[in-house]
Image 1 (cartoon, rainbow, N blue to C red):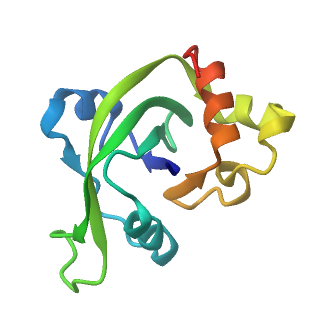
Image 2: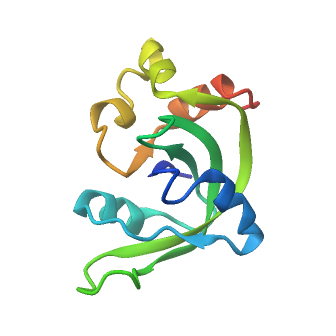
Length: 139
């Protein structure tokens, strides 16, 4: 199973809004970066991603699950980009801030640090486990 991190500005789409969508989830649309698009296209149903509040907060606040694999993004008039549907599955009791990630030597290679502007990025299994622990969840 692959793991991911998906960024959203909380004033555009927040963790609370994601939770309110319940089991039907929501489309992760509006991605307009080709590397992020490629990552969306690699996502498989059942895989999980960290939900990261970017710009405001700069913290990992929850975990979502892919419930529908990539399809054309209806918000893209040029029909170039794709979206996936995700649902909230778990809240991190302790949000993991970007500062905390940067302070952890075992996370120094994480895409969140190396490719800070990439909105959809891979997470290794070791990074996944570490972030879960830092966030107060069991691995």
